[in-house]
Each structure stands twice: as structure tokens, then as C-alpha cells.
Length: 305
Image (cartoon, rainbow, N blue to C red):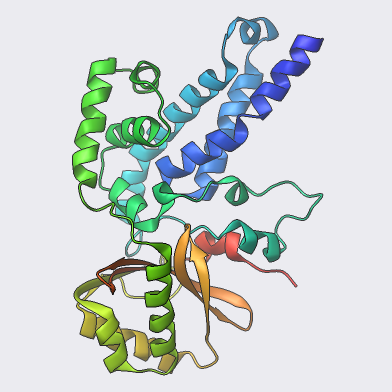
């Protein structure tokens, strides 16, 4: 009985790690939670004797979760071809934001978004680069470069040799290239704050000065809310678009918030979060804006009461 109880504790303790792996692989809190739930269902679907034969339940669960994510990534490509407009990863609030959101009380179950460690590997810029990889590249890269799993274990997930997995990770690394250059949080916060102030005062000239001339803004409404279906390119065009949004939405409140671990902005109306915007900053100017408006992707940001 003691060993059975210990095993249950051991597998339950893997949940946080699995959620972290699955979110980075899928870019979706909901899909990550479903993948991990599926992996646990398969674990508990094994006979007790079969579970006893597995030397490392954690490694088994990681392998199964990785395979589920690999399948989902393959089918996601087809789904996203039918997606209305651009598809962006689900933005994550800071844990303190979640604590204030009312979604998970002290006695309630922890929300999966609350279990994700916010570091550079969940920055929106990084997740968007991951989207450019093949499913196999993404799995090999995330498991090895982010979570330091050995290629021998990754081979079990991908059904390939360790050498082939090493090549996949190297190929993915080249895709990342210089795209993953961290900017100090304080520098980002200053730029984002200035963008907020210029946006609130509808100061187009100030916005143009804060935006890189080659900046790109991508919005994700999922066909559920109105937004641009194609990226807006150029600092001047983005500034004009932002001011037009402010004109059409009187009473919109802008808040400085952590988005995927770095400074971002949240737009809310009558207390309801309408948009979560993540920024990429280089040389003191905004180079990319990712605005998530799809209500289904904003559930972790929903506030109660």
C-alpha cells in the first residue's frame, strides 16, 4: 500500500512540469491542460502490475505527453489554415495577476495558467518563433534546449534515433537565430509605459517615435471579435490604427501588466479584458506588437467580482 501511495504522489507531482512542457509545445493553456489530462488518463488506464513495471513514472508521463502534443501540433496546422485571421499563442498573466483574478481561490484547484513558470521560453516573441518550426523540430528543441531532456529520452517521444533528434534540435536552433535576444525588463517597461501614455492621449507623433519604422502589429480575434485579419506593417500605419481604435472605443482603460513574463498592456472596458498586447522591443523602440482579442484565449485574464 505504501508503495502505491508513493507512486500516486510521484505522478501527481509531475503535473506542474508537464503543464509547462505542454504549453511551450502547444502555445495554448487549454490544449496543454487537455494533453496532460489525457496522459494521466492513460497512466491510470494501465493495470496496477504494468504501472509497477515502469521505473520512472515521470519519464513515462513526459513521453506520453510529448507524443500527444506532437499529434496535436500536426493536426493544428490543418486547423490553423481554417482559422480566421492570424493565430497567436494564448497570453499568460503574471501569477500575482492570476491570484487577484478570482479564478482560483485558496481552497480551489490551481488553474493551469498559474502553474506555468514565466521565463524567456514563454515570451510571446519566442513562442511565435516556435510556431515556424515543424512539429518534430519544436518537440526536440523545447524538450532539449528548454527543459534539458537528453536526446535518448526525446527519441522515445519522436520515434527517431537520438542522432536524428539532435539534428532536429539544431535545425530548430537555427530558426531561432537572433530572434531570441532578451531586452532588460526595465527598458521594456519604460517603452511600454510611453506607448500607453501616447495611446491614451491619441498622440500619433509620439507613437510613431516609439515604434520602429518597420514595426509589425499582428492581431488575433479568431473570427469572434472585430480586428485586422492581416498584420499592420510600418510604425506610422500602426500608430494611426491604434488611435482609430481609441476613437472607436470610448471608456477603454489601458493597464500595464506582465504578459508572458514581460511588460505588456491590457485593455479593458467596464472591467472586462478585451485585449492583451505583448511587445517586442529593440534599441528603445517597439518592433512587434501581438494583440490577442479572441475571448477564448483571454480566459486566464477574466476577473470576477
